[in-house]
Amino acid sequence: MMTTHELPDAPTLEVKIGRPELLQHNRWNAGYFEERFRHNEKELKKLHSVPLGDFIREELPDGSKGITYGQVGARKLSPHGSVRYLQVISIRDTGIDFAVKPDRVEHGYSGSTKKCNPKNSIPPAR
Amino acid sequence: MIRRAVLWQGLSTWFAGNPPFSGKGLGDLLRLLEESPEDLRHQEQDLFGASYLKETAPPREPLPREKRLELERLVRTLSQYSCWRLEREADQEIEVDDESEIAPTELFAATALFDRRRPTASDYEQAARLIAQWPQNRQLDTSRSEVRDAIRRLGSTAIEVVFTERFVRLAKPGGLIALIVPESIVASDRFGSFRIWLLGRIDLLASVSLPQKVFTGVGANARTSIIFARRRAHDRPDGWYSPHAFDNVPEEDVPVFMAAPRVHAPGFTTESFLGRVLADARREREKFWPNAK
Image (cartoon, rainbow over all chains, first blue to last red; front, top):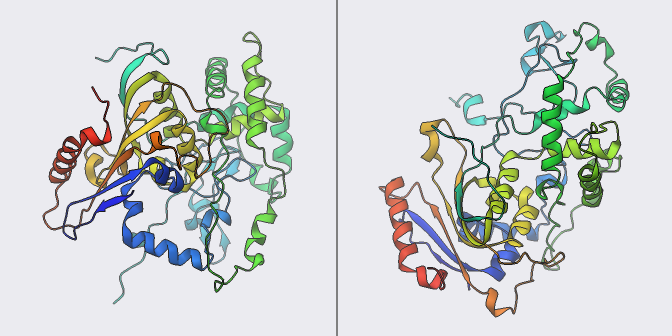
């Protein structure tokens, strides 16, 4: 019984969905039911594509997060931590130089790392 | 001025709230693991054996007693919640035609690298029982593996998930709930099992995704949604769920209203989006919520 209002220039996508269908898809966001995304998903399923989470566990054996969704919080450095915090900037042509960024974290730290943001990291092509 | 008040579970006729998003979360709970024997053994078995990196590390300050008591109290309380010990949603069966190619099995070989047995929902449930029965006047034994696994799991549980369960618990049966939640709660595969857990306790009425810029004025860039729900008079029994549990159950075939902004539509504004959603929801109120007062 799912119906969508998808006029091309409308500011709103509205979906009315019955609970049986909602339960089947288990998504509570209208955007998921947008026709173009549903079509893409069907095509991907034909290719037996699988979610990234099937390769990278969401939680690693040490309790840290293997895969995250969106912002996961500020990085929590600890000057008295027992573990060196390796950052990209510490990797030099000659090897790893912790002196560039002498940060530390506590053992067992599972906090955030900075998100990769290609839009801001990659210079525009000439 | 905001005064701290005691909120009793299951008494609120309606409840509106928004959980804190991400930030520090419950990561502080992991500090309870730092000083126990098992933790030290674990350090000696460091993955890369990079002990030379630790030679110059200053000694760690012990956890102050008050802080430890506070963290223990948190563990005792939150371990009785359900959200942190849910299994990940089982993958849905994939319907494919005969011409599709099968993914080579070697693609999955990477997961075999993690050969330590992972705790299951049942293990966490046992740990929760153990913690619940632990005498209040005795310090929690954080050297026990089941307690440690529980603390690790709790410490890595998203704070917004814990708060969402809290809000549901606060509403009384039949009470209305309106929550602003991060998009992950309604959309992420990671929280699929949590949504199913919620549907055992609430009837979802509506879910409205908000434009990403709505809360940038207060420093929040996360995408958010508002969910409207009613606390069920009776929780669904254990084992109620299957993807087709509501099929052929006429009383469950109630529509759920969902809306999302199309920010690239000509002339889009947040005000016009919200105005339209509100008008449509009002117009169809009787259809969606026939027994609304």
